[in-house]
View 1 (cartoon, chains in turn purple, brown):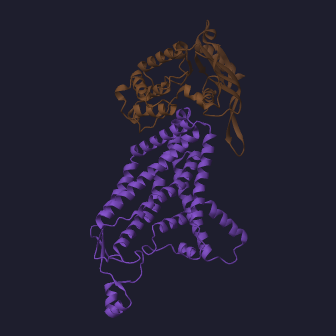
View 2: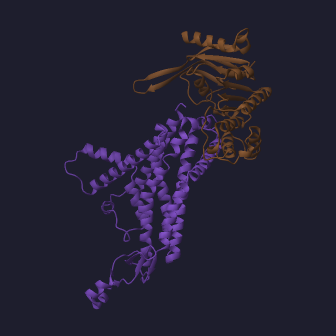
View 3: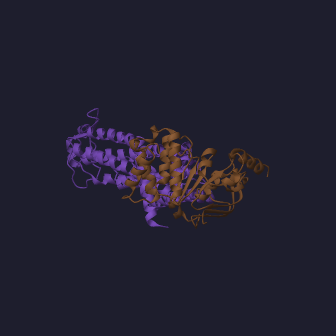
Length: 334
Length: 247
């Protein structure tokens, strides 16, 4: 194996994929979604909040002005309760909500919604759907034969195309996080660097599921199969992950040892989107700002959570599927 | 004379159904030697196995049995592909690229350095008459223009072995003239050209050696002159097709 040839091949394939993303307008569509979110962030203001004291992430001891009036000033002082007087305005004043905690918390809450709900779930799914056509189109015999007749290893061609798509999504993730982070910072004065952790976590999540799309593309060369296959696989992984976690906190009586072993095996083999979401949630130190996933919370409290193993096994699954794709691609007749 | 490509007892089966192991045999014990420095025609009726033979030569498919040597190296040696140029009939170039970008992309993958690539691309675009359209997207190209680009793509690495699969398909008169001159230049430089074509006048004009494949077997191999001596090329070829089909 000539390393220079591999690097050259991967470089050209990545470059071609990025060009493809721009030419097919996907780049601009995703950028437009980011700009809408940025505009949303620019429309956020926080007023009347209390300055952070003590443990910045302590969410307890807050009451609304109405509650304070109800229980009386003396009890508020006695119990050292903090009365909320602030307001968060979203969408340039369209939505107004009383501030729940500190200014930082309000920003963190919006960031968690943007990163965990919008980008990590809807964004990753949309990216999987939008990029599903890249490989099948490329792998059509009429498109790929001349390329395969070049002195470039087949596995490097496929890997280059895969990396090209992942880099494209990473680029979009960076733009998304950077612009929304800047917009929120400019409008609120809160510059929370932990929000940037969303980028590697999003890319990791996307990379795992895109390896499945790659495998389906190599086997079927059909965009439809890639779209529906990846979507169904994603649902399957969620279901297995959720069922496993659920059974950990409340085991079903009468479930046989074999069934347990089977579920355990499937759980450890497949990617774990719920667990990855939990890692994301923890990385963002979200407890106290957003409602935790009750099942994950319970597993953590029971000491059964193994986030590192979840992430490693999910990543290994992606690598294995990619390896299978390469193996299949290398042995395919064109 | 040395050989640019040698096939020895090559068989190729395509598995139609992995479960039932149903298969079709595209090539049956093909042994063929393509002389270096020649313009070699590969002829045969549709579905005879010509394209399969080219695919095996380019490592696009794997032979079920037998051996293939190209440019003195076994076909498993991918580096030799860097000395081969391949023009595919109806190749779909990425429609989002311009003519110049296409050549940069394929040239880069062929191994041309970033210093020599721009110069080579420019000169080839001039050579195939696409210099004034170099920045236009392929999506706006006619079939003939795409064929010209395909020809330029095959010439990027100044190949020792140039393989042309139905090269005149979609080309106008000027394009055909260009193709003929490129083939002659390549041969004059001591390089080998393999042409798969159904256009007999073109074959007759350009090629000296030929092989005829019928039903996956070599039905005839030799000098074109020997085949046509005293006979019309088309009727001689028809006879071979019929005899090969009967065999």
